[in-house]
Length: 111
Length: 113
Image 1 (tube, each protein chain N blue to C red):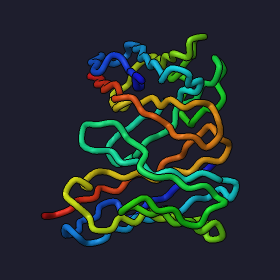
Image 2: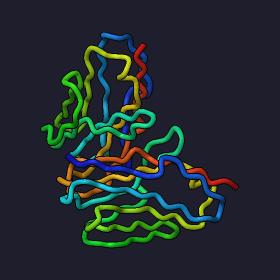
Image 3: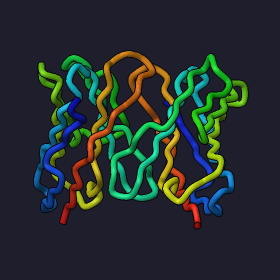
């Protein structure tokens, strides 16, 4: 089955800096790669996603890049703010009904 | 529209007991997935139901089971509870189409003592 690895497990940045979280996946048939943000005590929420026919997608300060050949994708957050502090999960989907998640990255943005 | 609702929010059970968790998806969503979340383990996939049929299953023992009703509401059952079953159980609702957003419920926090 699919296996998703996520790095780093913790990331601390200064407000205004950029943050990058990387994920690799094992199943070349995976075609959908969402990113979820989970604030403390809250449910995970989708922040951005990308499909395999697209190499990059941006939404304001957030961007995701996908390299299908290397089987890795990354989340980029620019101009980080304290409210960006949360756990971020990447995921990959192959068959259209099963999301496999990475283990999460605890991002801390220091004021 | 109403979001995904999970009940109960918190449960405390004793080893050996069984427990049933409930998930009501967003109206019109036909797919419900269940995940176990523990510190350091991320979200581990349990199973997914679509139109009352189990469409996918993760690598959990048979003590973990589920079902889905005709109104798309889903239940998850864990029998013979073990201490290691203590976790946050999240369900996610999707329309059922491929590569669509999963909307999560608030989760049920299960503590086994």
